[in-house]
Each structure stands twice: as structure tokens, then as C-alpha cells.
Image (cartoon, protein in one colour):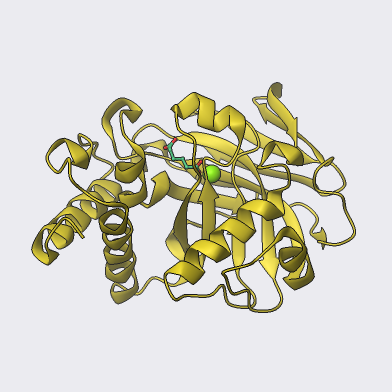
Length: 262
Ligand code: 0L1
Ligand code: MG
């Protein structure tokens, strides 16, 4: 660790406050250029601890920056991982108040729900599929707390990988009954197609992102419990939204999931 305990706590409190108040900030590595990866995840852990002590429950995990389109958009080469809590969940067809967010963007994703515990290292696509119950369409709403999305990867990790809202819905299917590499998706905004792709855009197979998450947790002495939702990462680049926008994600063989920004 490059940062001391007090600094980690102060940075977590700052980023958590920015998320709750929908206020932006400069990236935290500007003031702490030596911040390490362990520091970044320690800050994220402190934000989670604050949410749990405030009554929130873990709703799942997310992998981010998992597609080449998104990596190119962000100028990075590695995925990142974050947590989802119940306060981020929005029902299928529900509304999100734009005033509660800073500069939201939506990402089309495949959600996995596990039926048995997954533990790394050594987790593979095959182990994820064997341990998965269902897969279903998911829209992730990201809302970086960093001004104008100007950040580096460590700052993004500390900021819980920009997690802010998520919506899952449509028709869940058996994870082993579909070829997720060739599963097509169409993202619509106000009835217009704004992005399209296939599951293979996520690291060759969306389950690869889940396996990387499990191996990441394993390195930190943690596992992915049975019954956990994992958003496996944007299949396309993220699309900006504003008040009045209706967003629908259609996933081949799994129906659609929608959300409205008001
Ligand atoms: O879910 C993600 O792909 C994480 C994105 C983090 C960077 C951003 O805010 O765009
Ligand atoms: Mg995402």
C-alpha cells in the first residue's frame, strides 16, 4: 500500500459523498500519484463497507471495460471490477431521475446468476458456465464521479468502476442452453438503434469476464457466492443519456429490458 489508512478512508468518504450527492470531482490520483492498485481496491472496499453499515445489501458484482470497443473508448487495456448494491437496482421498465446522477451513460450487458459458489484462482469459462444458473439481459448505467470522464484506471477502480444503477429483465435462460459468443444484442434509444453487437465482444465470451472477476476475488481471499448476479461488462461502447430518453436493450432469445430517464 502506498497510502495510509487515514488517506484511504478520506478518499472513500469523498468519492462516496460525490456519488450520493451527484457531484463531480477531479481524479484522485492528481493528489495521490503514487496510489497503488491495492489502494484503489481498498478505497472501493471502504465505500462498500460504508454502504453496508448504512443498511445496503450487496446485489452483485460487475466487470467493466471488458470489450475492445469500451477499452478503446477509454484508452485502457485491462478490465476492472466493482460491486452492485440494492440501492443501484431499478426495475425493468422503471425510471431513473437524471438529477440523481452526474453524466450517465448506458451499457448493454449480459447478466449471470450463479447457482453454486465460484472460487479462483483457476476459474475458467467452463467453470463459470457449470456454476451458472441463468443469464439475462442487463443495462448498466455508469456515472463516473470524475469531471468530464477524465480519469485513469486506478481512480476508476477506487470510484467503484463508475457503478450507479442497473436494470435486469427480459427472459432469463439456462446459461448452458445458449452460445453467448454469437448472442446478438441491439441497444435502442428512443426507438433508434444506437449500438449493436454480439457477446463475443466481451473478451471473446461474456463468461470470461466472470471468470476474471472470480480470479480477481480469489487473489484477495474472496469467492463469488451461489446466487450472485454478475454484470459481465458492456458489449459496445457506452451511450450517453439525458432526461426524456427511453432505453431498450434487446438480446437474442432473451427478450428485452427497458428504462426511462426523467
Ligand atoms: O462498466 C464499465 O465498463 C466501467 C466503466 C468505467 C469507466 C467509465 O466510467 O466509463
Ligand atoms: Mg459496465
